[in-house]
Length: 293
Image (tube, rainbow, N blue to C red; front, side, top):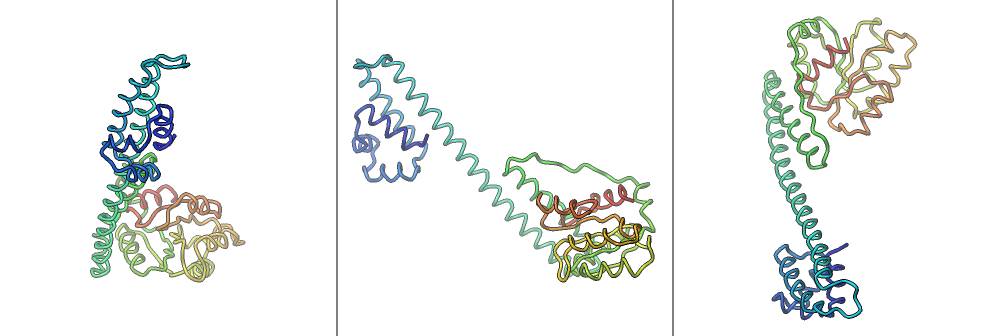
């Protein structure tokens, strides 16, 4: 029940006009009406209203006429209802304040991500030095969003041992990404761990590359989702429908900045093997490759 409904019902039951209530609260009647209509009473005003109505309840119900409840029981019932309402409003305000703080923190993290992206852009060959920081920023933002939405927060604790990293050396993959900077960063990271990477800028070129090379030439594909000419979903479907089964069964990992559940479900539905958010955390990406290969 809304604040206004409880206060209106209480005033009506006690035969107290809202004008009189406003005066006792030190408010102009029109101000109280606005606050009630907009549900905008502060906790202090609500507490004052509670105190005033509590005194009035004791007086009005001292000798209740035709009521089976005692004055104390009536008083307790209304006080309980008002107290519950107060707690609900307080909880809602705390949630609202938490979300505001979360949004402010997200803005700071986003600015940080933009700053590190600029550093990547201006430091070409050293871009990989900043990717881990970008991933940390992204992870922080993801945790904040999950907390704000009341979702369970997952913390990544996975680590790669040297044997798993060494096993990836010499594996060849196809990186399908329309953003040149992203291609440079990922290629630098993967080649630094001994992987051989070919790059294309859209899905149509990816499909051509898979068909032009011998079956088994590529051991994996890193597939962006949103690309010109042919997106990652359609590209994956076409690869999965190729007549040569070795080509058709190449492990495909989705890499996308829009890592919502709907996109994840669609990625798996078209035949992708894994789904990772961009910017890809190095440990997560290498772990995923080690698992698939």
